[in-house]
Image 1 (cartoon, rainbow, N blue to C red):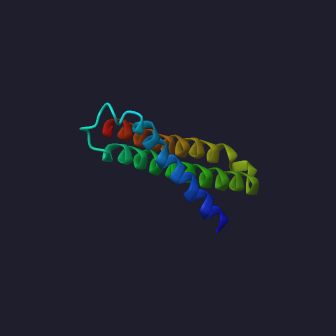
Image 2: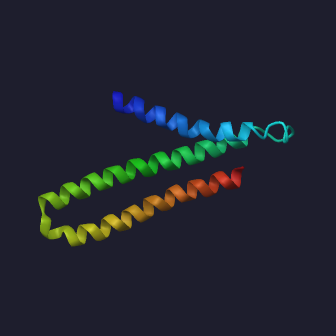
Image 3: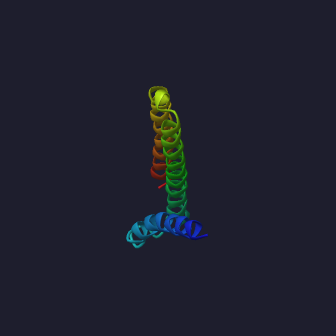
Length: 102
């Protein structure tokens, strides 16, 4: 239960930080809709959360698999690096979406 509380707390911090940054520009852009900052924060937070969880699970399971069968480490490492690259691209897509929203 403590892990879930920590994960939810980190997610809230990641989602609320862009709102603080956009709050400084509120006086200059009073006619703009305020939902764009929230949407950008949710996009980056969800992409970062999914990427971090996926990378943690993949890293743990790959390490476990190499520990069980050291002979297959070369083949496992190739797929590990490929999976990490795909997961990191998802986080970058979330960042691109956040910039395109705001």
